[in-house]
Length: 630
Image (cartoon, rainbow, N blue to C red; front, side, top):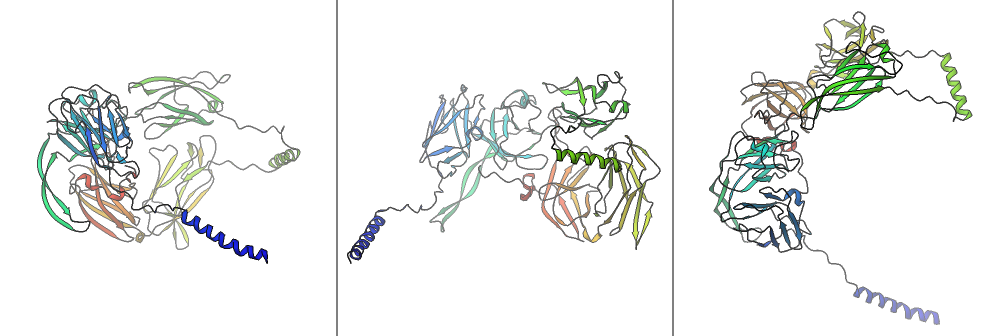
């Protein structure tokens, strides 16, 4: 009874304690609405647009804690500074300290772009620039525009854009910009606080931060003409709100427009690369390869000094001991050795004469001596093998003596697949250079009913660029079945191997599986070509314009975009620009329409390449995604 009575007393006491603890605990606040308001500018020291200010330090005050994101990249000072300024966010203010000496009677601009944000929510203050003058006058004119990649019209971000009052072409190379800006994520720029012109405006991907074009690898854009600056009064609608849903008044207000505001600069890299020997190797005894860092107009000269100590003596400058297999740009070379007394040697001693880019970016003749050797695979001695493993190896060796070794045929690679397109050309690439072909080993058959009937109307030719490749071309029929055969032993490689019998069948797609797009393109005055693009901006097909028409035959169904190139030199390639020659890159135009091609359809379109401004042409889906943290 006593224990039960004690329990009845303790339970209410425990419940009372729990209630007291619950009442005493303080819950965390629910948070409330997210702060989306930008910081508010309170004051600056000195005042913005101050005159006769000669100190290097300025302060900008806000109503809350702020930070400056990526100040070294986003904060731009004009005139450009040799030593980067110190930009620091201290609590609710920004402190800027210029490091270079100030020039007399000069307007200075500290353009923060969109780098100022509040500390907690990262709400941007917006595009902000601060200016002051060391003299009695302050310059106020502006010029703005956009920088696009010349080859694909993509907007270019973080590109330096500068102005020169010196209109000589050499100023871009010898002198730093007078005033600068940088492009934002949309490629837009605005150079502020300029005095009256005329100016030349340039874009530059300034690698070494010297504000001039002095490195061939720097991307650039240059103008065709000078620009003069002016202002005019423009109007815009200003809306006054009673609350977030109710408009009070809408009225036209005047504001100052700074012109020109539509400068277009097309950025490109010049056709330059450092030419040097990247790698030399001898992966097999029959050949060695040389890889260079950039394309070349000529081939290197090779002299065989000696295959190696104890082997045959030094050779002459003769080149009849090798075949050179080159690519179109002469930067990837394979040398097939013809002489068996040479390729059987483990080590080759080669003298190589070629052109190399020196420290002044000039091609200079150099001579290298190379030792090329093959690595033989290691043979297990059996010293560390277990008795069981050694027994297995001995049995395997005995079996290999009893069984006939497989014949090592000349290997063949081909692009034949079970189903091919109507425009396909067949490729046959042999393992090594071909020494001899007996008769006509290639046979082509077409299936009629159940029989294979030989086709005589086809061509087989050596590839014009690929040394070991042969091309088979024929007029295919839709939905027909074909078979290619190569007789065994008819193709002999340079090193004694012959081919095995080859036979492979394939079919041609039906005509109804294709679509056709025909576009009449106006706006060109000379040769041009058009390119069909997929959704990743990659070329699917290209064709020359014939009498202003681009005709894309036998296109697989899908979604495509269209691009056209003003092929000034008629080489069927897009060509970059050259500043020394004052040659702009070839113009590129985009049709902003999506072409949805369906099977067994034909679409006819008309396109004036100049109907839209270049900055408006590229479809949004083809533009690169903007960075999230801008």
